[in-house]
Length: 588
Image (cartoon, rainbow, N blue to C red):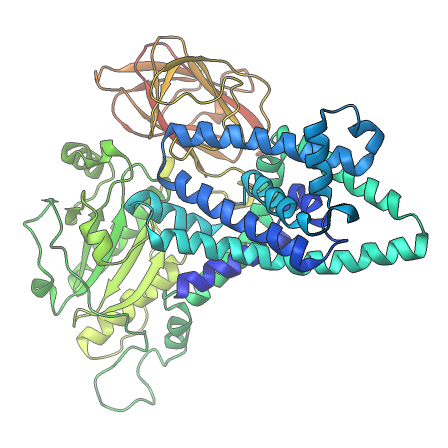
């Protein structure tokens, strides 16, 4: 129920997002008509269409990408006709008669009467096909869960709640705009000019969406505008225990003023730890049972080895394991894969050695432990007290100081006596493990496989699961393109012939790319440029200053770390050998 409320509230917040601007003219064009017969059917059709398309896209293949693109073109054509009929009946006369009739029906002229309901529904369907909401933390959580576990009735209901929230805020805006427009018509005496102005706005929106403006700059602006509010909603409705932890921080650190009874932390109780029965294998230890860990404070860390957020959290996990081991802390890493290559135990073993992990790792290839914990995040930290109860959680990066204090608090509780708080760990990390430059990030995780691809700008469009020649045109911020002959699969893009490349327009200090040598496993050479020249001082940890590097295994590679001012850059990587597989860009 909590997530349904959060999804609805996240939908309501979209009215404040710049990325919703292109669809507002389509909505406001109905403001001069009866709400029940005009606006309500349109908003309902918008919500239903978005829910259906988003549900399919969460688990669909390449055919969904192609079908949705075709639907977008049809919707743009329909709405362009709508805009023309609003501006000029003389211009509409040059169009074919069926389209004129359809345009008039959509515009809801007074002569159409009750038939405007059908026009409103059709307009709502078209708008729903075009609406690409900015995926903040809550919508991202819903879509991630669908991708991991498959779309089900719960997924559909969550997406419907999100769409209903957006329709609610649009409905209020529509009622308000209707009163404003009617007042303008009465005061200024030129209702026809107002109508034409709306028509111009509709055509401008069609042009903006057709050029990808809605999923480019506006999406980035929206991310900056509403993500903080949305994250606060999620945190407030979630169970991370931060508020209760701050209460515990105010307690006397040495037990002064307290009774002689054993110390009891004020951290909340989130239920019993499910255990690790679903592990398919264990690294660095024999299999662990929940019963064996009673009397110990346990830190469970869900991670996967190519996830940049997980990688940047590992220095803290290692530091806690080392600092608090002698006081009774047991750290258990649960490796739950995002990509298929992360299911290979040997790959996980090599990653653990590369990251210096010596604590136990449960290999959760079947997501059984993930589901038992009802987890939805990479990374996720669950702190368990000596009685086997979950007392604190941390989802994603950030909040390490709170988690450190929670560890100390639960260790003191296990010992039965509050001790003076120790200093928090401050691990030193380099390369991809270093902390991100959050102030300069304007680019988000970008997948190259068609199941989650976004921002793709090659003019040929994505062709799933078969070789296709691609080219690179002019890129806007957060758009990427392929060059050469590639096969785009559900999870990755694979280069069929040597000398192909990938280009991306981004803004962040660090750029990472998950790469692999493909089924053959042979090393693949590549060369990186930034704004057309070798990166020099801006090179990442996995290439040299000239931009040269080699794919030796499937993992995350740090390719750019800007040493000076962080600005918008064009990144390009060219592969000198065939077979390279590219999975996802991440930034820091």
